[in-house]
Image (spheres, rainbow, N blue to C red):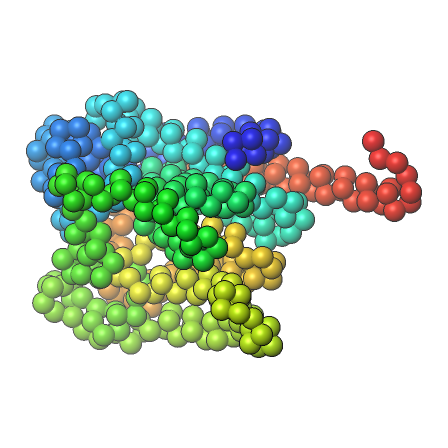
Length: 446
């Protein structure tokens, strides 16, 4: 895997240099225009880890900010009001990452923010190399592979330079697991996937597929999960908030922030008293209705052929159902009350499990449709979102309309990178086409 990464970085060295330059410019711009609360909060918990150990899982962010004192208690290191006053919910490996990062650069000030984002930017660019390894020649020959690569570039830049979030670390471990899977090293793949899940839980959707391919390798997954079990069982860690998130508990937050959530039809919280009063809102079902219609039209492509399925043995039947399993995964986004916009690309790397190009193209279309429905869902539930969740989200952008100028500059840089990247691949395509034409004429190619 290390050799493949080195070769791919060399192959795309010009593009990676350009990407790093854009990423470095994006870090201070984003840090100025965006209050990156999630990163700030993780930094606070990372530094608190060296004082309280895994007991930080039992502290709410507001209580911990008061205990840490000083600039930690400035109101920018705690979650906004719509998520309430919750305890730390990220798995152990995510906490360890921020503990190490803040341990290497302690102290609450702007330079620590830039340091954390710098690390995440390096990881994000490594992810681009891993994706290129997994896509192989498809990145030169198929449009969906290029679109996915370009889409991940924008997403990864926002998550690393623009958000300081854990997603680049999760994706890095997840993509490494997929590269190791492609190399046939299933034990190592399971171990690394376990670390990814312990950073953020969403990569767990790949576990059933890896287990089906190599059931015995699940042993190495359980070995890596000891990093969670030991702190949880013996060192005071608690994951009540994480569980509250999964079961849609009002103790996590009485305010749903997912415009796709159909539960808003039965009970949209009253902004005045969200825990005791709610009302029915029929337009909340519109995104779900559109999605169901879209799925009924497109999902038959992912069903195996009847003759092939009936003649297959049990293991082969399971393998034939893999594309359907992956295609149905984004439906989970409708089930949870707390889904932020960037969650929509969490399941993007699952596209690597498709063997047929038409399946991959359909999957990208599905993610795009859900993205539009997410935005449309805000419109459908406008009275509720404008009453609280949306203004609370917009406070992350303290400079108001000036933020558009900063992001506009970054958008121009990303567009330039895309144009250069597109020309790079088109030139490669043209070269390969000339070689094939020459070979067809019987000419020798040196």
